[in-house]
Image 1 (cartoon, rainbow, N blue to C red):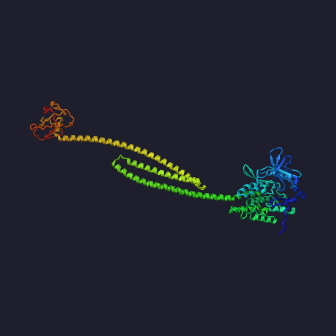
Image 2: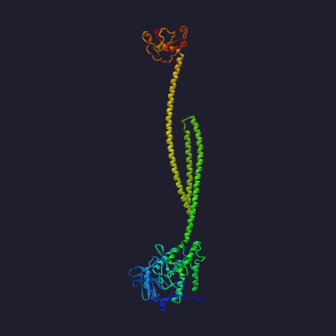
Image 3: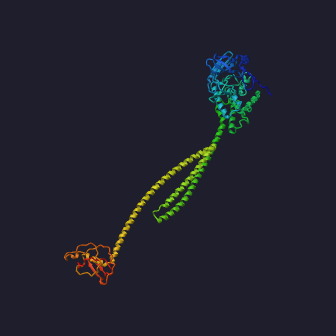
Length: 617
């Protein structure tokens, strides 16, 4: 085994302690660094304003006290004191000014500073919380926790680099997890060994230091020191991040005790940073991406190593697992949505098919019922035109069937809605989402059905109105028909009466001829008496004796209207004697004015003749 060069430092402890190249200081300075008697103690006054209350912590090159300003009671600060020899060959005031200029929310804020011949002091706020080392003592960080802590730290180091400084000693003990209003706020502590970006002064913790940083700490002379720059902070922060993720057991170099072992650990970090047993939940592409990022941050050559700015932008690789899970979740949701869409289509198709089947069944049943009702209505119409009870009964039966169908449909919808609500309460997120979507579309379908029902109701009202108007018109027609029937009956009675009178005239031609000769002014004026006529049993009061026989012969007879047929007077029920029965008279025809009267022997009792027969010629 080759000789291993020793670490020349101000202290000789484990590799996790901060070490510093003592070649920048003289031997006297090295002896003075261990002399704690020059540093102030509790109760002492520092800078004329700050009373040291108690020790807050001890570092490799100084102490941190809780101090109280004597001019502002209850105002406490964290005051750090370091031996003056630490800044041998360095411009203390210039570096403190640069630290004050590197203002960033994630860098400890420099409030006040000063120096004496024995020590240098500066004050910072007192924070509530714990260091990252205290947090890691309870277990490793998750990838999301590491992202929340190390991105702000990287941005703070970036601000420090822009101010022309490098930290040189990033490790869990120098990262403070402060709490503000219950929220995590990482802060970079201990800027005691910070130096200008290209300064030859070097310090750091071997376990987290970069290769060039270790070579500078172990160099025998200034000529052997490699060039230094701010990229050593990238390596230190990456080492701290890897330790926080995998723990000390799987962190390469945690068991190193020599320079060769540490160099081998650095080669492992640059090629295989993630142990096979580390981060078992991180697999596939996210694990490979994180491993490649660590290889870039752990590059042995500083020129190939990423800057702190590039590292800050690339730290979102810690969320790659979450993004992959989110993508898988989105794909699963899309698949579920696709399945839900198919389910909706299937359910919709089933609903439509069910409604169609119900409609077909109802339509067939209704068709049969309507056909039967129509046949019955036709039969009733043939018997009586006025009967509409069959149509009313058929309509009532149809309405009852529609009501039953609607009740059954309503029950089916309520059962379906209850099933969806149960799924929404007890199912998974996707099932609840599916149930809510189905409920939404069901409500829309119900709204459409309500609109259709309203339109159907309006159509029924219009149909009732038209039916009422038709019934009214039909009633008017029926009334007019009845009036016509009544008029026809009256006319028929009149015709029957006339026919009776005509038959009477036919049955009594002698009476008719006598009347004609007496009343007709155009009768034969020869003065020949007519054939003897049988005497009536009683004179007829209906027709008086004509007065034409009393007029002089020279006076023309007056114009008479047509004889009126009087009702026949019934003959005497007493049979005539033989003496009263006239002898048969031969038939004679009298012509007057072109009209003829037919006289026949009167063999039965006829109309009673006028009483004044003496005036006849």
